[in-house]
Amino acid sequence: MFLRNEHYEQSGGAAPSSTGRALVLTTELSFADRLRANLAQIDWTPDLGARIGSREWFRGLATCTALIGACWALSPGFGQPLIGSSAAPLKGKAWENARAQAIAPLALGADTGQRMAATDLVRPLAENPDRPTQAFASAMSDGDSLASVLRRAGMLKADIQRVSDLVSGALSLDQIRPGTRFEGVLGRRAKKSDPRPLEQLSFQPAFDFRLTIKRTANGLTMDRQAIAVDDTPLRIQGLAGTSLYKSMRAAGVPSGVAADYLKAIATRISLSGDVAADDTWDVMLSQRRAATGEVELGKILYAGIDMGRRKVRLVKWSRNSDGDDEDDNGAGKGDWYDANGQTERQGFMGLPVAGRISSSFGMRMHPILHYYRMHKGIDIACAYGSPVYAVFDGVVNWAGYKGGYGSFVGIRGSGGVGTGYGHLSRVLVRNGQRVQRGQVVAYSGNSGLSTGPHLHFEVYRGDQVVNPRGFSFSSVASLTGAALRAFKEHVSDLLSVRPGTGRKSS
Image (cartoon, rainbow, N blue to C red; front, top):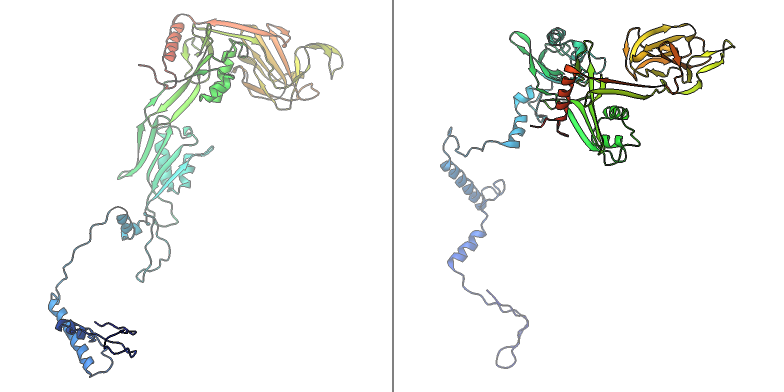
């Protein structure tokens, strides 16, 4: 150690005055410190390519020889492995990444979606390798067929024919509904230009079963799996509010069912005058629920409304040709009966086509023959080709050309009441066919003695023509005996359904 003071002065005494030179104070170092300092100044690893033969060079050679000797002494010897710890097994994402670099996934078309980085060992292929299997999914569209769906998937022609034969044994190929989804796997092919053989195919052609076709040692075989279906109707209730239709739609009632409900209720009450906001409506419709989760809603089965002091409960019920009664089952046919087993139709007859009355019933000057004669109906001016609807149920007793009426349709109803529709452009029904109220039977036109597109509409009571305007009808029919008992049992089953759940109460 040393202490340096460049401006040292001593005022007083006999000390000499400062001459501007520093004073250095030193201490004696120990042997270890001196040895450590000397060793630190030695270069133990000099450049052996420079100053060859010098003291520093030999010192570097000695260092190199000592290091080699130490490695030789510590080594296990030639041919002996170096013992070390093995790496832990890969898991999770690390294993997936390593698997993506393996040979087997690459041979299967790199199903992991990852690619191996190219190295010098990678040889470019002349073309991409073909996948040994190929999955496909397709849906049948309107006007499509099973064979065309499988052909688009790239299936072998012989397998398409075999699948068609197997499926036709379970149901008609024409019964496969549009929108049916097909899922399958195609196998390996000999050449890329060849179609693939089928390995597996699965689809649900109907609501209550599913078909699975697989390739086995005996070729393609089919397995049919039944699907449990619950046919319990769906019941929905709600308050009428400001709009009965809007309230039903907000509660999830399909638009067609809501419209049928309003038509049925309107035959018994006035929707505008009798229904209050706090009245409760009640509707049931057919429903099929598969165990696989699909739901299929059908037609309306029950229409009811609770107006406090008065309740209306209507049930759809159909009568077959043998005179026995059976429930409608969602087919949309039959008549509305109240809960007591009576059906009633009443009201004024509406126009069979959308338009305006251009000529009334009675005596008039014929626009073509130019003389006074009886006009047996009314003329309704409308656009050419407008749909013509039957105004009530009946049987067609005339469908074809009828003199000055042109193309004509006549319908005979119950109670001796009949209707006629003339000057048509196209007839959609045939003689003897039973039609229902609201069914389209023809399209308006300008055939026969006509001066322009319109519909001539007639109404008969017995053998006499009557004025269609203001004509009203009413009919009441009651169920009796076994028919009434079957109807009552059906009504009891419907009313046991709990609202909202679609399941019967326990």
